Structure formats: C-alpha cells, structure tokens
Amino acid sequence: PPSPIDVTKLCKSIQDIRCKLIRLCGEAEGHLESHFSTIMGSYDNPLHHLNIFPYYSNYLKLSQLEFNILTKHCSNLPTKVAFVGSGPLPLTSIVLASFHLTTTSFHNYDIDPSANSMALQLVSSDPDLSQRMFFHTSDIMDITNDLKDYDVVFLAALVGMDKETKVRVIDHVAEYMAPGALLMLRSAHGARAFLYPVVDPCDLRGFEVLSIFHPTDEVINSVVIARKIPITKQCSVEYPLAPTKLPNKCFDIEMFNPLNHVNLLEELDIEEQLS
Image (cartoon, rainbow, N blue to C red; front, side, top):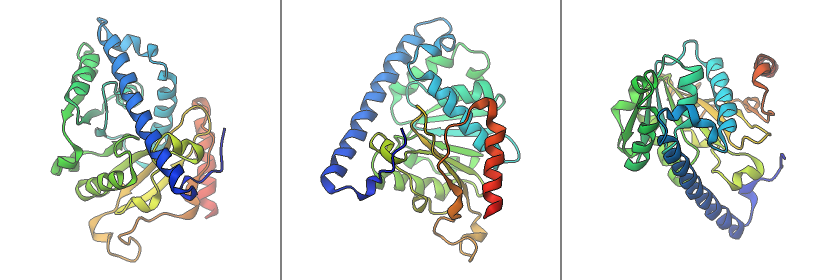
C-alpha cells in the first residue's frame, strides 16, 4: 500500500541496507529474466508464451501507462526508440512494439552480450518484430552521436543502481540526445524506493520534466517523462541549465484502468489548468 516514507531522511545505516537491497533485487531480477527467457526461447514461437513470466501482467499495465503518458506529450508517434538496459527479457520493448507502437523500430542496448543473445532468440522467429527490434551490446556511456537518432529514449529502472551512476547516465544521454526528444525513466516512490532507485527532478539537468506518475497498485515503478531542452534555450531565463519543472506536475496518481485512461488524462489536464 502507499507509504509516506521518505527514504532520503533515513539514517545512514538504513540507507546502506537499502542500497544493498536494491542491488540484491536487481541481481535477482536478472536471474529471473534469464531463466524465463531461456524457457521461452526453447519454443518455436517464443512470443506466444510471454504469459509464463510471473510479472507479465505488470508489464502490460506499465507499458499501457507509459504509452498513454507518451502520447499525451508528443504529437506524433515515435519512429525510432532506444531502450537502455533491455536485458535478456525485453518485455517493455516487446509489448510496446506489439500492441502500441506497431510501426516503430526499437533499438535495445545492454552491456551483457548473453542478455542480448537471449533477447534476440525471442523475436527472431517473428516476421514483424524481427524486422523492427535491434540489439546492441554496448555500455550506454560509449554511445554518443547515435543517441541523436531517437525520438524517445527509455531508461530501465536498474540502469545505475546508485544515485551517482544514474545521474552520470542521465547527464550523458542529455548531452547527446536530440533537442526536443523525450526521455522516459522509471523511478520509485515511498517504500517502493527500497526496491528501486529514485530519480528526482533535480537529477534531470538539461531536461524539462513534464510529468511524474506514481502507481499505487502492484506495479512498483513510477514513470518520469522529460523533454530535452533545445540548445538555444538552455541558457535563457525560461530554460536554465537546471531541470525545469512546475511544482504541480508531480502527481501521486493511482494506477489507472486502461479502459478508463481518458478520464485520467482529463484529470491531468484539469490539474495543469489549475496551475
């Protein structure tokens, strides 16, 4: 259930325990995804068996949420997307490509070659996704000018499991992303921050933070969306180098029913008008 706890105010010993827990959970998730990716990859049509993954329904909900947030803040659907930290079971890319962004190409980045090999096995037999999903074995800190090609960059929750590393990654993509491109990140809120790192608006230098959404159901990750500030505006009064964010743009919103997402977006519009 929702918790008002602020992990930044905890004593150092508890902070250290939290950091270790995040790393432990991250390692466990890696094993979980590898295990089920291997099982799925043994079938003739792996994508027909995604539902054997225990958290598949969560990915369906989270991808629905991210798609609705994305479409609220861009006039045209992206043609080329990067997903950083895709792992051996890139369910976000697969679900978005299959059900929401059905003409978009997805470039998945992971530092682990075995993870990319397993992920490729899942889509290679599919006539559609095999033509639209690409896998790159690279450290995102080594990717520079290629980042300019993407309309949207997704950053997985466990890319940078401590604050310093995550901020370095964000600063790096901010340097090379195209002006006006969107960055979508996963964060955590309240007690959920014991499982995943928190991305604060102040971490997003060079971006305009558009919205932050905190689900309160079984989906753990919050979703942050930000727009790369045009270079010509970065040093202006309107667009300082620090992240720009209106205070009322941070919402604690219960995870919406996908069948009722229009009402949620209307609620957000009302909130924005009240500013």
